[in-house]
Amino acid sequence: MIIAVDRALPYWKEVFSDIGEVRPFAGNELRPETLRDAEALVVRTVTPVNSDLLEGSAVRFVGAASAGKDHADHDYLRRKGIHFCNAAGCNANAVSEYVITAIYAVAARGNWTLAEKSLAVIGVGHVGSRVASKAQALGMKVLLCDPPLGDATGDSRYQSFESVLGADILTFHTPLTDDGPYPTRHMVNSGVIDRLGTKQFLINASRGEVFDGRALAVALREKRILGAILDVWEGEPEIDYSLLELADIGTPHIAGSTLDGKIRAVTLIRDQLCEFLGIASPLDTDDFYPPVRRILPKPYCAPREIISQALCEAYDIAKDDAALRELASMPENLRGKSYERLRTARFLRQEFPHYTVELDESSREMNGIFAGIGFNPVNIRTNKKFLQATSENPEIKAYDRDKSRGE
Image (cartoon, rainbow, N blue to C red; front, top):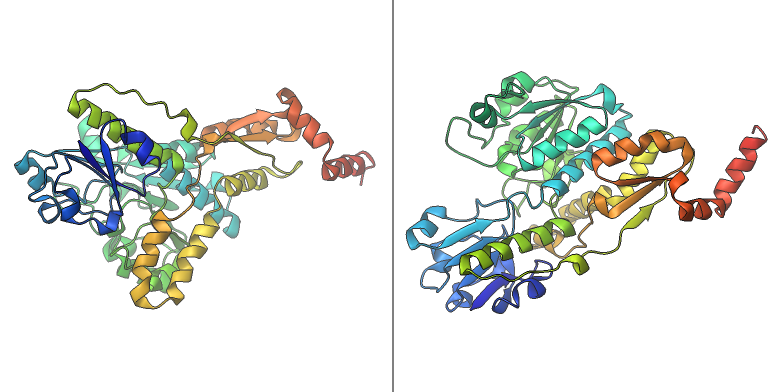
C-alpha cells in the first residue's frame, strides 16, 4: 500500500516504511493528485482533510499525528467510510512544560513568588492535568475548572468558569467548540475580560479562537489586566502582530512541538494503522532519542535561580519569542509562510525527562520540586562523576575557599 506522510514529522521513513511504500509531502502543499492511489494518509494540523483533498482518492485511513483534530471534516469522513484517528495526548507533557517555563520566565521578570500565586487551569484533560501537577510542585495554589468533566464525574474539584475568574493566572487548555452546553470559541471575550483585574494574567496554549484577540489587545493596551502569554492565535498563520507586541511572551504555536511529542504522535498513528490493517509490526524507538543531558546549576544559588537556570537550559523560550517578533518587520505577504517555517523548520526541543539536574548539597531539598515538574534530579552525594566535575571547577573552588575564609 502507499502511505502519504507529512515529511515534517520526525522519523517518518523509519516508522512507516516497513508497512508500505511511503510517499512524503509538504503539509501545507498537499494536492489531491498526490493521493489518487494512496490508501493511507498521515497529516499534521496544517493540512485540512476534507472532500476537496480526498474526493476520488483511494484513501481509507487518515491519521492525524497531533492532539488536535478540528482540521478534519469528520462528517465527510464518516459518510465515505474513511477511518480517522489522532494522537490524543501526544503533546500533553510538552505543552505543560511550556506553560510552566513561560510562567516561571514571567515570574522572574516581575519578581513574583509563585507560592503566593493562584493558578486556574481551565480544561483539565491530558494537558491541563499535567499543568496542575507541575504548578503544585512549584507551590502554587491550583484551581481546576472543567464543567464537562465535572458533569461526567460529579467530582466537586472541577469548578465552574465563573468561580475561578479571581485567580492570579488563568491558563486555558480546552478544545475549540461552537456548540454544546460549554462552547469555547471566544470563551475569553470582552465580557470576561471586563471582570478581570490589573493583577491578573492570561495564558492561551489551546486554540487561538478560544480568545477574542481584539478584546484582549484592548485590555492589554489599556493595562486593564497584567499581561498575557500566547502560543496560539486567531487566523494562523496570518496572526495579529499588534497583539504580539502587547504580549509578555508570544510563540508560533509550538508549545507542543517537542521531539518526544512528535515521536509519540507518529508511533501512535503507526500503531493504529497496524491495527486497522490487522497486522503486527513491533517498532523499537530507543534509537530515536538522544542521550540524557546533564544540567549543573551554579552552586550555592537561591532556589529560584536554580530552577530558572534549569528551565532555560532545557527550553530557552525567549528564543522562540524573539523569532516570532522578528516576523513583524517582514513584508506582510511573507509573514504567513515564515510563520509556518518557524513551526516546522526548527530544532525540536527535548522534554524535561531527558535532563538530569545535578544539585549540590545545599540544594538537596529541591529534589522534590524538580521531580514534580518532570526532571531527573540527582543529589551530588550519589553522583561521584558530578563530585569530581565540581571539585575540578575553578569557580566552585574559589567559592569554597572564600567561604572558608569567611569572605
